[in-house]
Length: 155
Image 1 (cartoon, rainbow, N blue to C red):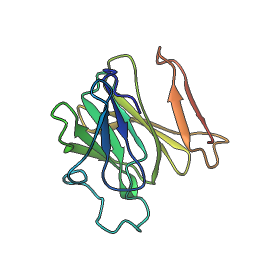
Image 2: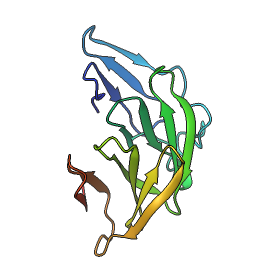
Image 3: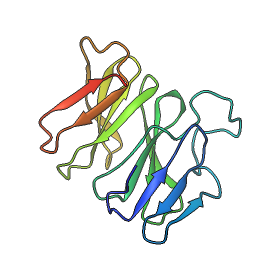
Image 4: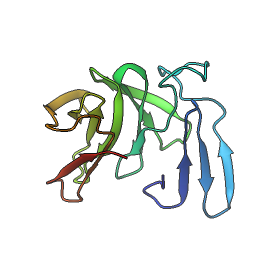
């Protein structure tokens, strides 16, 4: 995914590490390790240890990364070192993440049971939660730029 600043690309996948690609210099750098303080393990065969489910906040300062067991790691991206500064936890595995674009700092997460959580990241608490009726097996979620609508669906 593109960094909101537009100068780099974050490349993730089914491994507990990532690459950043600088668009100006044309160079890719592999993270020296995964994220510090996460639920990821060194066993790459384990389910749910990759970084493929992640989202930058609109400012590009915080990266939310889905971990194991419904944990969402909040990474301070300003330093670029992949330092986890907090986390929130859902009751089911995370399928998708989306940030509000209105500057509120709210993060929305979609669980494997089609439940949507709205998080106040500053307070690290869930402020709203609902079941997506008819959302059996939904895997994707995205909101509009005004913050009025949220869509869920399949890949």
